[in-house]
Length: 245
Ligand code: GEK
Image (cartoon, rainbow, N blue to C red; front, side, top):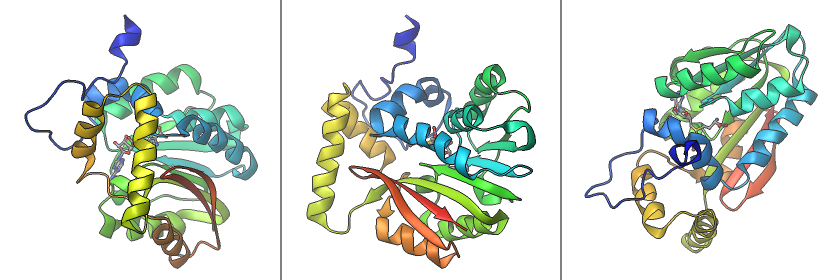
């Protein structure tokens, strides 16, 4: 019963017109199922964020998860480090996500608790960060505002700090784009989504999630001042980069 209500069936029935995707209560309620069955490698990326945290987070600093949704990356980080002298901060602009994240993190992440803020990352100022996570969040920020978000992050990071940036990417030419889109849709079908669900979700995200090419991401990270930028994970058109200040 509870398994069924947590299952993502938001696009299972035909809709007369599909409205733009929003991170509301309905999405927050099925989010773990939705993201695991939509983003190939999501579970691996979350686990590895914990591993990267153990190597990079420094005592006496902050670690931010921007666009934290239900706090999955925060939980992985909390489980991987000695948190006593580190302030973990999760930020999301969806009240539904933040309310649920607060309840989840209260159960598993104390000493000290994770601070959760409901805010738009475009209005944020971060400080003394040894690690920042942008796990599939920047893709929802209007493309022309991404550089100022990354400048703000770079400015608030300590020298040697680590940014993890995971994104759905666009391919540079139409044939490659089609090839990678088909691979992703094959993954979603194998996860149990129907053709109708895949196409309605695609329409809902069309003007909301704007992917850019890997080259665009790498060049922008270097342009804002990160000294080292590497791809550490890719599955189909889903990529995770690390950038070191
Ligand atoms: C995870 N990182 O599970 N300011 C703050 N939050 C935002 C903004 C913004 N401008 N735009 C979008 N969000 C998570 C998954 S989901 C990815 C991240 C996905 C938030 C939005 O409310 C949502 O919770 C999250 O970014 C994107 O590791 O659904 O594909």
